[in-house]
Length: 266
Picture 1: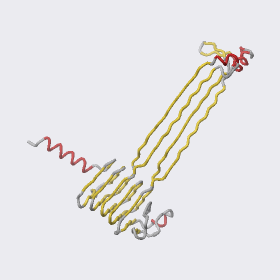
Picture 2: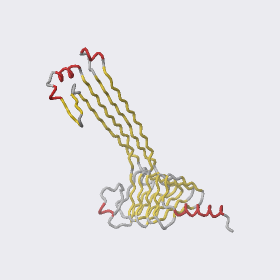
Picture 3: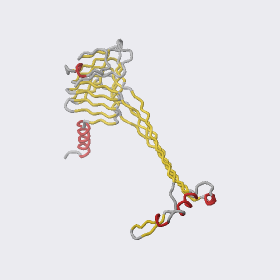
Picture 4: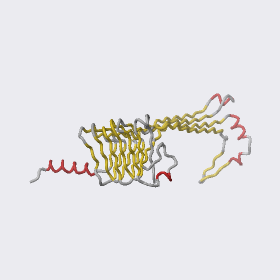
C-alpha cells in the first residue's frame, strides 16, 4: 500500500512544477542551470530569481512585472456645537466642522533576475516592467517582441473640509420674514426654517509621481536582445536604443549605463 505521506509530497511537487504564475517569490539556487518549462506562459510578480551560474527561461511568453507596496493613512474629525456668545451677536450661534485628510502611497518593488549568464527566450513576447536584470557576464534575449519599461511610484494627498455657520443675525433675519413662507409640510409634519446656514466647502487632491527605472547590467559578455519581428523598426519610433536594428547588440563597453533599455515591435 502506498505511503500517504509520500503521495502528498509528490502531489505538492507536481503542483509547484506546473504552476505558471510566480508571485512575490524568492528562488535562490546554486545549480549550474535554472530552466523554466518550455510549454507555458511565465508570469512573475515581484520575483527574485537568483543563481550563481546560469539562469535560462524558455517559454511561449514572458511577463515580468514589479510588485507594489501600498499604504493608506486617513484621519477624520467632526465637531459641532452652540455658542452662548452667539446669543449676544459675538461670533456664530452654531458651528459645525468636518475635516478629512488622507495619504495614499504606492511604491514599486522591482523584480530581480541575477546570475552569471542570463538567457530569456520566448516564442511570442517578452514584457518586463520594473525589473533589475543583473548578469556577471552576459544577458541575451530572443522573442517576437521585447518591451522593457519603467514603472511609476505615486504619492497622493487629499483633504476635504466643510464648515457650517449660523449667526444670530441669520436667525433674526429669518424670523423677520413672513413665517408662512418658511413653512414646510412633509409626510404630515410641519416645520419652519429658523435660519439659513452659511456653508464653506473645500476639497483638494494632489498626486506626485516619480519614475522607478528598470535596470539592465551585464559584465564582459555584454547584452544581446533580439526582436524577430521584421516590422519592429517601422512601428516603434520611441525606441530608446541607439542601434535601430531588428537584432540589437548592447554591451557594457558601448553602453556604460545600460539602464532603461527598450526593444519593441508589434
